[in-house]
Amino acid sequence: MADVLDAAGQVEVHLFAAARAAVGASMVTVGAGSLGSVLDEIESRHPEFAGVRPRCSFLLDEVSCSDLHALVHGGSRVDVLPPFAGG
Amino acid sequence: MADVLDAAGQVEVHLFAAARAAVGASMVTVGAGSLGSVLDEIESRHPEFAGVRPRCSFLLDEVSCSDLHALVHGGSRVDVLPPFAGG
Amino acid sequence: MKHFSHGGLLVYRADPGFTVNNGPMGEIRQVEVTDRVLDVRGLEALVDDPRAGAVVSFSGTVRDHDHGRSVATLTYEGHPSAESVLAEVAKEIDARFDIIALAVAHRVGPIPIGESALVAAVATAHRGEAFAACQALVDLVKERLPVWKHQVFLDGTDEWVNCA
Amino acid sequence: MKHFSHGGLLVYRADPGFTVNNGPMGEIRQVEVTDRVLDVRGLEALVDDPRAGAVVSFSGTVRDHDHGRSVATLTYEGHPSAESVLAEVAKEIDARFDIIALAVAHRVGPIPIGESALVAAVATAHRGEAFAACQALVDLVKERLPVWKHQVFLDGTDEWVNCA
Image (cartoon, rainbow over all chains, first blue to last red; front, top):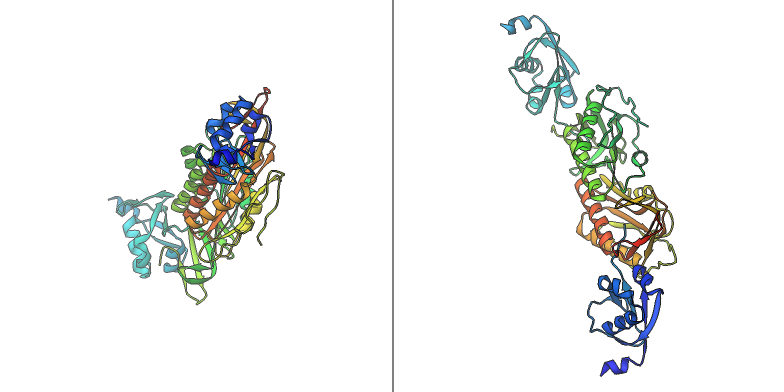
């Protein structure tokens, strides 16, 4: 399975605004897998992430991604974006 | 009749923009009467006024007046206002 | 900080009592009909307010073309009541919208191509109200202000706009 | 006359190729995400154009109160893609409306109370289009721009807006 192969790599997860505040870091490195498993791993390490996670959107290698089953390969980048509040 | 009494006086008619251009003067003095008779007198003296008159609105002593039967007493002032084009 | 001026020969202030507008309504900080150059940036500064979250401004400029014809010169003429009518328009907009401050000015006399004929600025707490109020203000000025526009074209002909 | 700057540390330009927009569309004369002070008057000057009959501008300023609480300090954080997203927003508005020129800028980093967070200016031939396009531009920036607002209140608490 692709999941097994990908799991050998590491994924950079960049956290912004309220998500960064919840996790306490602007970047964490987790094992490759699905987008859902990547987020689950962050939540297991940083329980406060659970509060903001449901309101976030995600970028997978700079492209918007809302499919929690999407594969996140080793070397990929995930961005965690809380609701925007510009202007 | 009031008309007869008023007719003894004179009315200042102030003309603006296209109305002034048609009449060739910014003010003319005509005999008192009704608003309609005042305008008729201007038109009889200055036939070009007929072209712009139907598009004009009128002030009788600084108050908007659209009633051609309204009495214009001697000493009153009529303003002839073509369609506005500000901004 | 109220500022009023007496502009061109055609203009006087018929109703000097309108300027103060306190209580629940916003402040009308400038209402002017003038033959001088208009400055929308000055109006924006006038409506600036610590309570404001949004300022929307409008500048309407005279163009060198109208309906495909080249305009050589352009002159606005104002009725003597123009400034007091403008004040009434400002008060009506202030009553209709949730305004913190507004300012509006119309120029009369000859206006060089590219310069402003009408400027307005509105400050409100929230942005939607600022856009709505500024647009309504400009629309109402166009509808009510006793001002006329005379255009001379490059071919030598001329017209009073809306009277052709 | 295209002008772009690289503002705060959080901002880079992901898509440098968007700037020229010729043909039937209007000119996008400035798109900027910056940590410097914004100047709506500068944007108005940028969109000035001899073909324009109307310029509408917007300035959204940060306030000292939010939902009845007193704000002590306020900081905007932008995603690295913010400036390229802003460029896409500008292009979309330019495609939707009959625009002669537009300019838009968002500030990031700490913003003192009363200063602008978002400024925009739109020049069009006719006034209705200028109001509609400027308002749509501001609305779309608010919806799409990956920017976040952090408020610290006078009572010492803080919040990320829209995440409370």
